[in-house]
Length: 320
Image (cartoon, rainbow, N blue to C red; front, side):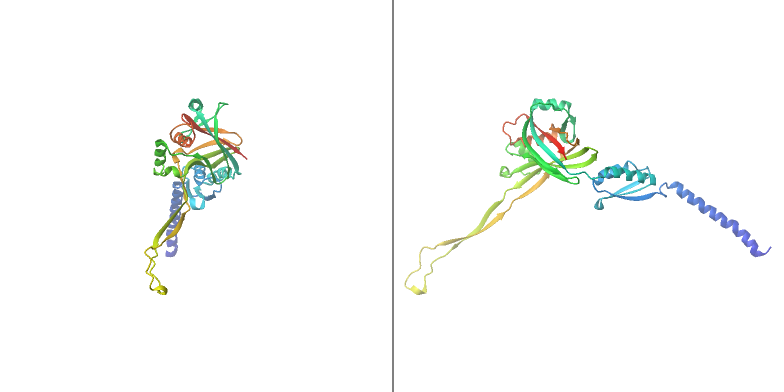
């Protein structure tokens, strides 16, 4: 056998061993990284908040899966096994759906302290100090105001719940805690309370309704005038040189009117935010029972005569 053939016999086993080693290394890589064969998918979120969609998607991730959000594009990006990606897609298709616009009817009610205690005993505690009253019965309640607003499927609506009369020290202190300066002319500026309402999720006929109370303070439009006084002395005339100048000098007032059109700004009462599940066509009652909700109720009652010892309640009704 020649030297060349001996060389080939020597190289063949060596190259074969290299290939086996390479395949073994690939196997190690595949086994050590479960996502090496994973799928990457992006999901455009159109109708529900991006954070809610992210929370839904995370329930379908494997332990090795990864999920990130791109708020500027309203996108979710998932990296996971194909079967998990399909589960995420199916779940988002179920919940990321448009809800048709609805009409929200809001009645602002007052109830006695005794009635509020009865309601609260059986009510469901909500965030912000509110109580959901499941069985209000036919007990007496007084209607302060009735409001109605159009509630879009992918946005929020604002509804006013009443004005504030900042006379009592307790009310002025509460306003000051929310950034409204306690100035001598505070009572001259209209202060209105209200709620931002938004549908966040839909389960068939049941909706999740988010309520975010706010204050709106309006600076009244004012007209002011700055000016100066000009003295117009009589210095005589060349037409009558023998006539002396007058000893009485008239004056002229130069005025420049300035108009301040006023301004309004909103202040969120975030500690009183809450959310409820509500059925279309079925009214619910929220009682401003304690803490932030009760303080807000007291502020709304500040404009009502004989409101001592009463509580504010909201009756909400969604209609198509």
